[in-house]
Image (cartoon, rainbow, N blue to C red; front, side):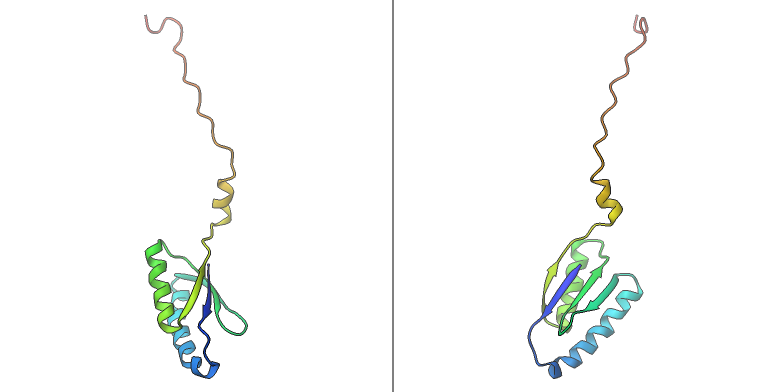
Length: 105
């Protein structure tokens, strides 16, 4: 999850950049690279990307910053099922089976 805080500029100067941003972001929603985005009151946004690795996330944030220069807070998230799987007690190894008496003679 990404929280953006754009650099301060008068809203009238940022309008064109914001339009370019949405033209760039909407296809990411359509193809699943982004799951959702919410605009923050005033300025900025909160978005959830579905990036397969850090390199892809880095590319997306650079593309975002090219359209709207910003600082980003990055919050890695886990699916609920994945997080819950970490809570399961570790499985104990089964004790080795003993050979039946007289099997090795």
